[in-house]
Amino acid sequence: QRARRRAGGAEGGGGRGGAGGCAWEGLSPDDTVYQMLLAAIKVKLQPADLPCETSKFFSNFMLPMLPPGFNFDIKATSYKKLAKFLSQMEKKKLLKVKTVFGKECVEKVEAGHKDVLAYVHQEVAAGG
Image 1 (cartoon, one colour):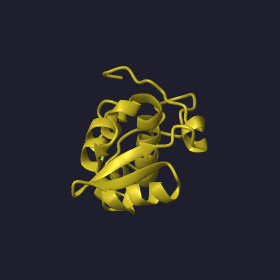
Image 2 (spheres, one colour; image 1 turned 90 degrees about the vertical axis):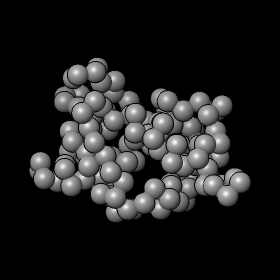
Image 3 (cartoon, one colour; image 1 turned 120 degrees about the vertical axis):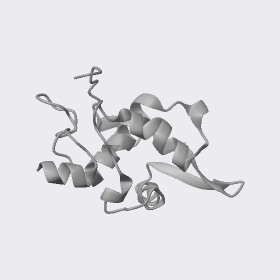
Image 4 (cartoon, helix red, strand yellow; image 1 turned 90 degrees about the horizontal axis):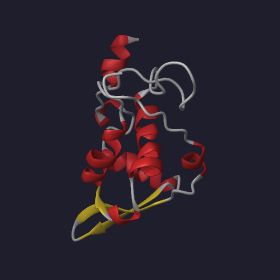
């Protein structure tokens, strides 16, 4: 399991915010990136933050959702690239990506999407 966590880029985590342990234990890389997106939409992102370049969206809003000590690499997912992940999320109607001045930007997120509404964010204290 430790090797899978390293290969997946995520260490720690389990489930969707349930009791006992960290909510991120045992998640696959695909589930981890999805949870990062849901957390970013529900907890961190403000309407004034959009539109936002996709790379900045990932680094400024999604990555900070990981608990301290966790590492993540999008290449460890089945998507392999951020653009492919975001395209799939667009198909799920979680967000809208648009080209603005030749750069891919997240234009809109759906905070009312059923998966976002069902997501329970578990605060993790720094160092724990």
